[in-house]
Amino acid sequence: MAQGTCASGWDNAEFLSVLESATLRHRKARAAKLRGQGQARKSELRRLGFSEEYVERSSRWYVQRAEGQLMKFEKVADCGQDSIRVICQCCGVVVDRPVQCRLKLLCVRCRSARAREDRARFILARSKVIEDAKRRGLLNQSRPRGQWTEKFITLTVPHLPKDTVELRIGRAAAAWPEFLRRLNGWLRSIDAAKSSHWFRVLEWTPGESDDFGHPHFHLWFFGPFIPIDYLREWWRESLESLGVSFNGNHPIVHIERCHDLAGATQELIKYLTKDIDAKGNKISPEVYATVYRSFDGRRTMQASRGFMKLAKYGYRPCNACGVALAKRTEIIKHDISVHGPTVDSFGDATPSGGP
Image (tube, rainbow, N blue to C red; front, side, top):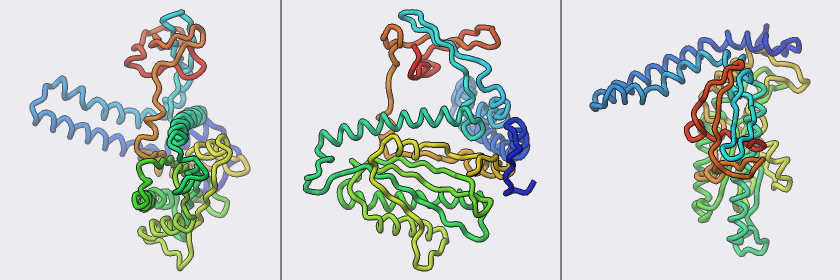
C-alpha cells in the first residue's frame, strides 16, 4: 500500500499487526541502545566500587525499558484483560479496575484515558495558578502594569517540498527550544518570568494536501499581554535558525484569549497523534509507523518550571467512607488473585470515582 493512502478497511487488529512489523527495526534499535546504556551504567558503578547487588538493582531500569520496547504490542493486546482490585483499608469497599498498558501512541483506549488524566492534572495546576494570581491582584483590569490573562497559542510548521513525516516533526521539536529561549528572554526583560506559566503540547494530525501531516504546538500561556507580532517574529526566527526561509513572510501563528476553559483544555490536550483522517478513515499503518518512530522517546508535553508540581495530590478519599488512607491493592489475573505491593510502592491506585 502506498505510504499516503487512507485505508478505510483497516480494522484495529490488522492495523496493529502491520504497525508491529513496520516498527520492529526501530524498537530493536531502541532496545539495543538501552541495553548498552545499562552495561555502561554497570561498568561505571563497578569502577566506583559499589556492590554487585547495588549494580544490578541500579541498572534494572534499562533492562526493563529494553524488554518493554520489544513487548509493546503484546501489552496492547493484553490491555484491560487483567484488573487491579483497590480495597479501602478503613471500610473495606472493593473496586476492580482494568490494568491498562498506558501506551498512548499505540492503544486507542489508553490514548483516551491518558488524555483525560493529563487534562485533569492541567486543570488542577491551572486552578492554583489562577488562585495565586487573584490573591496578588494580577487579574485586576486596573492593574498599573496591565492585567494578566490566559492565552491559547497555536504555532504551525511550514510544509517544504522535500519533507517527510520525520522531517516535519523533527523541525517542530527543534524549533521549540529556540522559541522558548526568546519568550523567556522577553519575560525576564519585563520582570514577568517568575510568575508566568505555560503548558505546551506537540500534536500531529493527518494532512489533506500531502501524506506527511501537520505537526503543530498548542500552548496555554498565563501572563502579561504579548503582541502577536512578537510571537510571529520569535517563531519565524526559531524556524529560520533551522534553515527554513520565509522570504519576508511569517509562519502561521494564532493567539486568542481563553474565555472557555473547558473548550481550551479539550483543544490543548486531545490526542498527541491521530490515526484517522478527516473523513474518519484509518490512515495507512506505514504512515503511522513513521509518526510513531518520530514521537517515540520524544518529549511531547512540557510545562513551565514548577507548574505540574501544583497538580500533585495525596491519597484520595474513599467515596464510601470519605477517609483518605493508603489503599490495599491486588492484581487479578484470570481469576487468580496475586497480592501486589501496597499503594505506597505501587503508586496512587485510586483515581477519581474509586474508594
